[in-house]
Image (cartoon, rainbow, N blue to C red; front, side):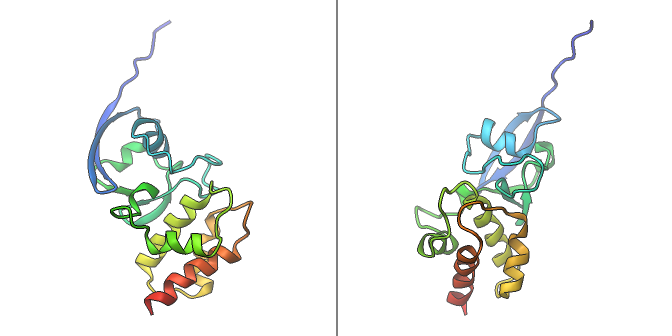
Amino acid sequence: MQQRRMTRTPIAFKVNGEDVEVLVKPWQTLLEVLRDELRLTGTKEGCSNGNCGACTVQFDGKAIDSCLALAIEADGHEITTIEGVAVDGALHPIQQAFIDYGSLQCGFCTPGFIMSAKALLERMPNPSEHDIRLNIAGNLCRCTGYDKIVRAIQHVVDQKS
């Protein structure tokens, strides 16, 4: 029997503002590389099929499920994970709002919600409640429900106005 050789491909991209280079297998997901190779474990693996949003990251500013993206697709792009949201130890306003509004309980889904909300607010600075609810529809929470999460995001919008 012929043994299949594991070929790794070098890729280079930015993660949280820093240049990184890694060797990836063709079938590795971005989620696997972020967690296993780069040790950025804030991005969570939930369903592994794009239904829960726990693995949401920003890919060139757009929120994506990192479990559905192949790592090789990140070559030459910019990825932001939850670890890159706070700046110099200061929480991003959306992170602070999640704390202030009790929008987290177990915390497993929180990074994905924050990444989705951050991408929304960068794309649409003054979303309606309807826009917020549509934007977070791909993120599931089994602990808090969604009203506190929506209120936290709306608070950030109101603070900007």
